[in-house]
Structures are given as C-alpha cells and as structure tokens.
Image (cartoon, rainbow, N blue to C red; front, side, top):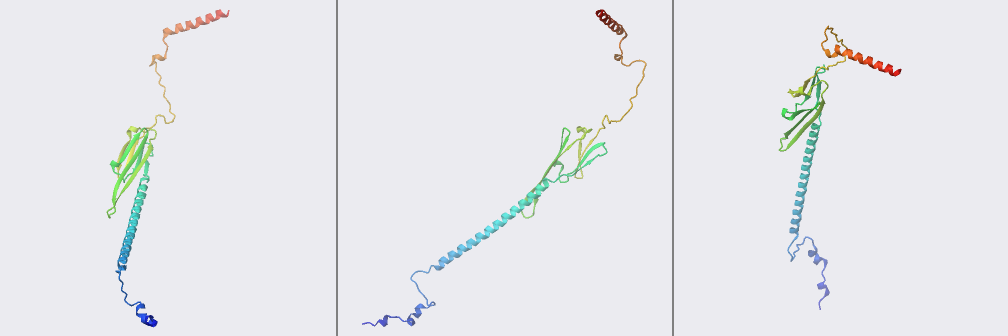
Length: 222
C-alpha cells in the first residue's frame, strides 16, 4: 500500500516550479510579440495622423490670416477718399485738382452729364510675397462735382500733371451783376422807326368817330 506522503509535495519540492524566474514552456506559439507590433504600428499611425492634422490646421489658419489681411488692405484702399483742391477762387475760372498718383491715365474716367462731372478710377495690382503666393490689390473711387453757374459744360478740359488730375473751365461773367448804370438818351430830329408814330391821314377819321359817338349819346339822353 502506497504511503500518502509519497504523493504529498512539500513546499521545498515545488519551489522550482513556483519560482517566477523559472523558464516556462508552452505548447501554443507565443502571440504577444505579434499583438505588440500591431499595437505599436497603430500608435505610430495615429501620431502621424495627429501631426498631419496639426500641420493642416496651421496651414489653414495661415491662409485665413492672409485672406483677412488682404481683404482689410483692399477694403481700406477702396474706401480711401481721393483728395481734391478747388482752384480758381478769383471767380474767373473753375478748376479742380485730384490726387490720382495711384492710377494710370487708362484707369481714369471723366464724364460730363448735364451740369455734373463724374470722375472715377479703378486699378488692380498683383503682389508677390516672394514665397510663391500672390495677392491682388484693388483700388477704386468715384466722385461727383456740380458745375457752378457761369461755366459752359462744353468748355471743360482735363489734364494729368505730376500724378494729379486737373479739371478746368472758364467762367463767364453774368450779364446782370446788379450794379446801377445810367442809360444815355439819344435825341434825333427824324424818328428812326416810323411805327412808333401815327400817320397824318389816320388822325382825322379817329377824331370824327369820337365826335359822332358823343353826338349820338347826347341825342339818346334827350
């Protein structure tokens, strides 16, 4: 009969099997390195995607900043008023001078409609920042002036001198300036226009008609 103590294992006997550093062999192939490689590969791809997304976000932000800067500069240029000076204050002429140094002669237009002058200009310029990107700058203005009294619209002239648009026209003096003057009276013996004087052969019938009318009226009263 077998003794139970033979099959009873002691802690000392099982110590080599319980030791964590004891080499363990398995009948199944080791799969941990395969899953580990897949996990590391996925982590690496996620990091690359995150970096690409951050780069695209910075790129979009830069593009939006450039668009905002270009739009703000363009809108400022569009609504920038064109300075002008009114010359000819002595009353002998009408003259205007506009600062148009940003425009070429082909980009300016002056139209006369009735007694109004319409001056306009439009220019577009392409700008290169030196980094391979381009921007377009648009500048436009429109101004309208009224021709004063005494200026003939057909006499208006324009010239471009030193980047300034000169608009000029002579001003005629009014026929009646309100001043008092004495009109001389000329005396002649013979009337120059006989129509202002009645003919002699017409005076007698007129008096006879008047007398006849008075006589008839007197008879009716009696």
